[in-house]
Image (tube, helix red, strand yellow):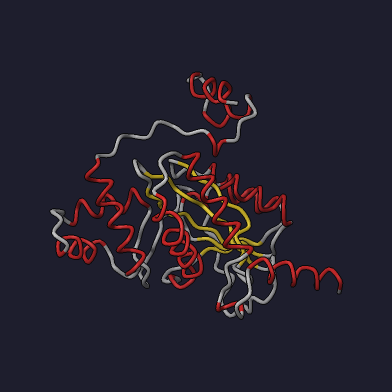
Amino acid sequence: MSERKAMVKADSQLTVVRRCELFNVARSTTYTDAAPVSDDDLLVMRLIDEIHLRLPFYGSRRICDELQDQGHTVNRKRVQRLMRNMGLHALYPKPRTTHPGKGHKIYPYLLKGLSIEHPNQVWSSDITYIPMAKGFMYLVAIMDWATRRVLSWRVSNTMDAEFCVEALKEALRRYGAPEIFNTDQGVQFTCEAFTGVLKDHKIAISMDGKGRWIDNVFVERLWRSVKYEDVYLHAYETPAELRAGLKRYFEFYNERRRHSSLQRRTPDAVYFGMVNRELAA
């Protein structure tokens, strides 16, 4: 496998996606050489991430103030640049939280007034920044809204659409198709590679509208749990270590971690219990 991955990286005449297809290597396990980031920037990014988790309504100006209060020499322009690289934005009503790609279709918001009561009724997805001992990665997860169960996930060192598409295809392969799939208007979710998979499976596409910041709260809570209960405790050094650690954590999260919003039950217990009842009915 390692020899095939080396060949994937060595042949520069084809796209990474096409090389992965030819050598039968999963795209999410193949990483491009990201532009180097200084140790100082990595430290500031880690601090920004921690502030964002504690105070998700803080924008770049307030985060800059917070960092300066902690004794760090930063200006707002630098904070804005690093937040863009991390894919972070404040959670509060504003004209637009994320930007679709040029020419990408934006779909209407379908969840207003909808009572979400059973598994596979609504799935959602989002991306978060994951700090490591040296460097960082991005994590995408697919979640079932009614049960909070994490259905699939992938990590990547670039914020392209490929690892999001891989996570989506895995969730569909393992659990079938939901009625509705909801995301924000980020370019990874508005591109044809992602929406095309949803349309092929006859899934209604829903996208957060202007000011629909509240729809990110469920996944934001997941990110807080992942980071405080796993990522920050281990400071993973390699992508392989990160993936192994996240695999263990998501198994714990689904199988053993009880949620107050689920009447102290686990996501697995609620998801499979409701699915089995529906199948029996």
